[in-house]
Image (cartoon, rainbow, N blue to C red):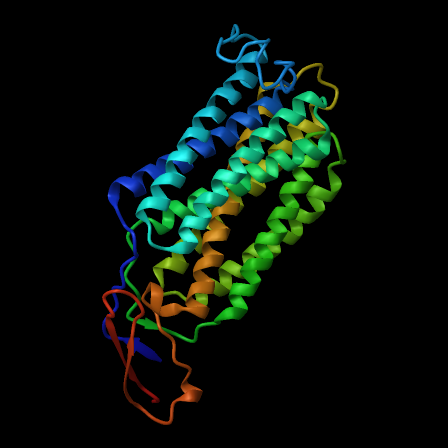
Length: 339
């Protein structure tokens, strides 16, 4: 066992106003994902037949009736998200000293531009399944990026007093594979919703996703049970996974079993599908955060307050010290107990 006697390494670049703005941006993007799911679930994708204008106008708001209220409302919210993303990118570039955070904010800005283009192509080319699915997948990627920015502009959490037999990069690799499995599930679900694929590949891959997430969270919680940065998102993943499986079953029943002959989308199908998409977005973002934190602990643990020293590299018990990289150059000490 290796116990850290001092452990409170702060996060560079914290400012309450910028963190609050990043959280607000991420929440608005989540709302945009729900709005997009409402468009698809209500078959309202072509209710506004032109782009980038709406019924020939750039600034006039059309009568918000029928499917127009879903489609045009989605466009208006997307424009607002674009402005928020520009503000977040500029603010991050000017205020944050971390190069990777600056690049991430620029990536978010590039993605929101690509999202606008893909959204327009879905209208101009009459909802091609491939383009519509890419639009959905990129939207959830966009949400995950803004969640990363929001998390890492906040205050860091204190490191644990001790870490017991950590699994290291093995668990991090498993988490990364879980993210990949979730992306495959996202694409298969998008193709199914947009009419490009039948339902069974999405359902079959859900078994893989459940197994991967269950295994990853079990190992993460058992190996890092004293690490809040790992334990809390792992628990949240399990809770979201249960909800997602239940919502998936309801959505399948209302869409495939009960609603396959419906003339228009029924309310239970719309509600279950939108909720399924929303929980899926939260599940993906939380898994990404867990994966990042696992990799940080495995590769550069000192930056978030945890430094691991394998017992096999130590010749005996005693006191060991490490200087944490950063402006404050904090000193972290361990007592190694071989008993």
